[in-house]
Amino acid sequence: MGPLESLTDISIFAACVEQGSLSAAGRGLGLSLAVVSKRLARLEARLGTRLLNRTTRRLSLTDEGAVFLERCRRILADVAEAEESVQARKGAVEGLLRVTCTAAFGRRQIAPRLAALAELYPRLRVQVIVTDAVLDLVKEGIDVAIRQASLPDSSLVMRQLAPNRRVLCAAPAYLARFGAPLAPADLLRHRVILMGDPAPTAIRLDPVGGGEQVTIPLDAAVIANDGEVAHAAALAGAGIVLKSIWDVAEDIDAGRLVPLLNDWRAPAAAIQAVYPSARLLAPRVRVFIDFMAAALGAARHWD
Image (cartoon, rainbow, N blue to C red):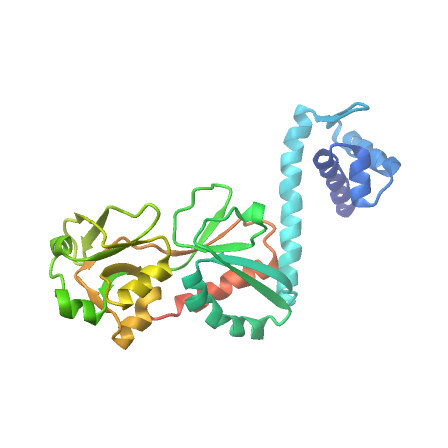
């Protein structure tokens, strides 16, 4: 028996387990019940052991079947990944890619790069879903999320796209009225804009050259659960805000915001691509992640 026939047999075996019956597996594979039963019996005869206990009502794995199934799933996943890698090399990048990110990141970092992505992969369609909520990727059918948070779900995979420092900044109008903080403790007497629901009650700062970190309690003048609202409030002179550098770099360059306490750094929050599985990663997902890693990594302002 050749390797392709063996691969077909283990595909049938895995389908029987997943579908719960030989007949359901046959329907899914386009095979008759007789063919499925024959191929399964041939597989068991070749291995010299029973893989499934079969009754008129249900299937159940034997101990040997459970061990074999785990290996079979890995083999089938490797085969599928190999096929997809070849398709990607041939340029077979197509279909709908669903990406989720915050509105601010989508507007400033994703949208300006979509034209270049379309030039490379004209058959790729991209749906950008903007929300500050952390969506269930599998339940919502999302291919990849761009996040700045830790990874609570161990079934997901995370790849860093770019470093991302955060800066304290304020508008010139605010600084003209209230002055600039010269040390972290000066924040106690300033108007501060905080983000979150609930908002943090303190900020940790580390000296750039090394040394002892400090934690400053904060009593916010403005609290927003949306980053764009906090950004707009800072531009309007409402107070000092802590923002990711990707979000405020253009405003700092243009003089609309002024970075503060440059000898101190807040903890960084790296830009991450989060996706359900490293295996069976569709070419459209793989090329998007690679594209964004290259594009964001080339930006001058991350560090």
